[in-house]
Every structure is written in structure tokens, then in C-alpha cells.
Amino acid sequence: MSRPGLPRKTVYTRNVRGMDSDSFRTELQRSALLVSPPDNVDELVALYNSTLTALLDKFAPVKKRCITERPDTAWFTPEVRRAKKVRRQAERRWRKSRLEVDRQIYRHTRSQCSAIIVKARSRYVMNILSSAVSDSRKDVRSCEWSPG
Image (cartoon, rainbow, N blue to C red; front, side, top):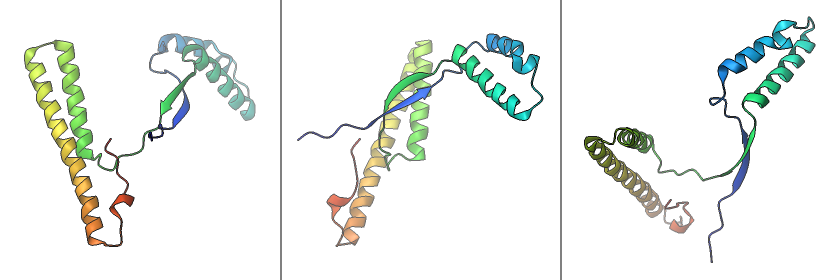
């Protein structure tokens, strides 16, 4: 019997950071929104929405992406988040510089991160087991835990 797949979700995004902001600004300054704005508030709001939507569609078009929704993991603590952040920073530094000292720092932070993850997972499982032992009516198999 195979495990059911994780649910997928369709999201729509814009790459606003990747757009040319100078061209966007120039086009916005030439638009009717800034050249000849209407006096009526309702018309101004409609023009604002249509102008910005058109400019965003031109410079940062909407892209459709399918993502996998992953369940939250209760063992993922702030300590684990920090360790993973430090590991990613060390890896980026090593990949950019290609220095042996940066590689050693990355390998050290990678092993520290792995140890922190293992400790957090085991602590989480031990808490589940200890709570199940103290409550004899609770079935350990009913506790939600996933190894991933």
C-alpha cells in the first residue's frame, strides 16, 4: 500500500523584484493617472487600479505555479530555523569564494545543523511517548508524527 501524495496547490505570483523599476517609474509618470487625474474619487480609484494593473502586467506578468503543500512539523523549532539559516549562509559564502576555510566552516555548520535537527526530532518523539505513557487511555499510534 502506497502513501497518498501530498496535495498540490496552484498559486499566481509576480516577480516584482525582477522588474525594471526605472522603466516602470517612467511609464507611470506618463500615464493618465499622473498626467490628468480625474476629479471624482470613484473615477480616480478605477483609473489607479487599471493603470497599476496594466503596468504590472507589462513589467511583472502574473505567472502560474503549482506548489506542494507540506504539513507543518511540530519539531521544527526556532532553534532549528536559526541553524538552517546559518547553514545556508555558510554554504552561500563557500560557493561564492571557493576557499577551503569557508568549506570547512560550511561542513562544520552543516553537521551542527544536522545534530540540532536530530535532537529536536528525538525530543519531540520523546514528549509524545512520555505523554502517552502518563495517560494509559491514550493510544501512542493515534499521536500524529511524521519522520519528515
